[in-house]
Length: 202
Image (cartoon, rainbow, N blue to C red; front, side, top):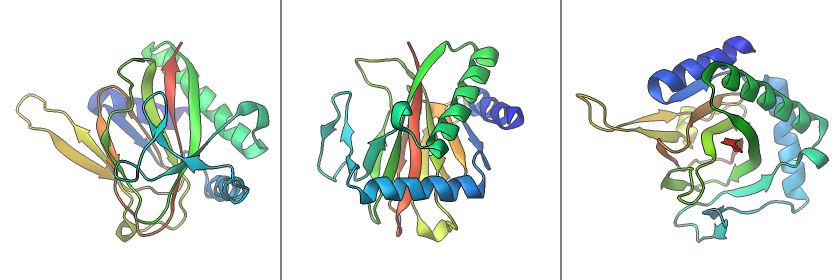
């Protein structure tokens, strides 16, 4: 797994974002997607909000539904995922000295047609979020299904701002600098599932 971690860190250092396929195995993707659907079927999800007060907004800005992961009540599969995140945090701290001390993660469901407009993940009044992390739980995803993550890379010497898009393939992890890279979620033609969160300083 250290090889996977290193590839993500190399991408962040060179481009501001890193991508690792197979962060989760197909079996883990299937199991976590099942847990997500069980929670949602039990009515535990709610409409996502914006800002550090999580103000609920109309679907003109974002249309996903979320459920925060709680280590105290996590299922074995969720605990295993969070343990891997802890390993990643330790590796980042050893190699990049970011001083990460905590994290927060939630399940996210984007119903067909839902999106999240271009935004930054860091709050104006709270700079603790350092790295944004998304791990996709979609099986057999096709590019024609949509739902890509669009990341806007800022102007560099000799280059204007440009955009990359990332397909939400099951098991794929995307990590980028929360306070630097604006991004958006494009609409999909089918339900789009992920675990999304932030690695934070204390």
